[in-house]
Length: 167
Image (cartoon, rainbow, N blue to C red; front, side, top):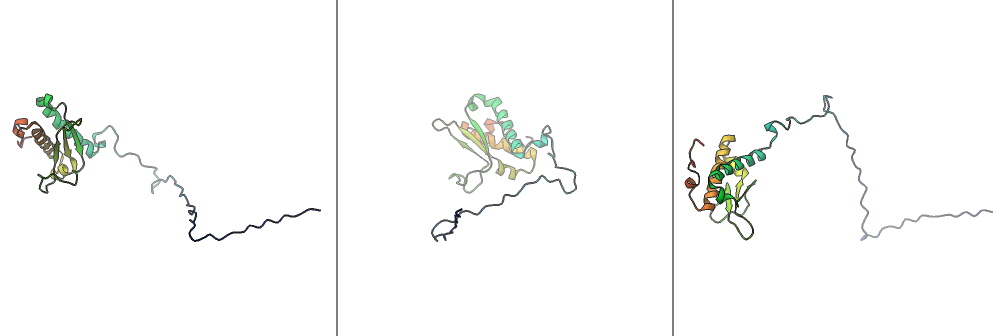
């Protein structure tokens, strides 16, 4: 004689304040696709060895370094503890002396353990100069003006060629 055991599964309704389990999400399968003409996946358009590989930001950083190197030839001892930096845009809180103007650069004096800093703002400078040589000249002018604030001199004393159009 065999006994049969009957198991009944009872589903209890959930109470309204009890959290519901998260629904399962279907994960899309990513397939490697060829381009529509069947020629395969595209590679980089420019090899790393050519100058076009560098971004606009990298080229701007190089222009700032070039301007600093030009000034270090004359003011190496005064500029040895100064940090030069590039930021994309200035902070949204203008300094009291700026009167609503967008600054191209700022000088921050040394405070405590922080050294003096000169910051050049990339986007405002690039928006004022249309192409490469003019951007380089404007970057040089901004760096010279901020170093002049740092040293307490006029820009013409810092760089005798300041303001010349032949830059």
